[in-house]
Image (cartoon, rainbow, N blue to C red):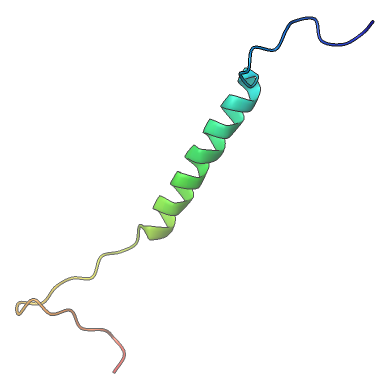
Length: 53
């Protein structure tokens, strides 16, 4: 009979674990990159001014 040759031990296979870890790292990297932008410079009075009126 063809099929699985080893008994399941309740843990997911290593490839699924690696895929999940890679997906989480990719999501964190994308969120970090999306939030990383040029910081607004504060003026001497500590108030930031926008370019638009």
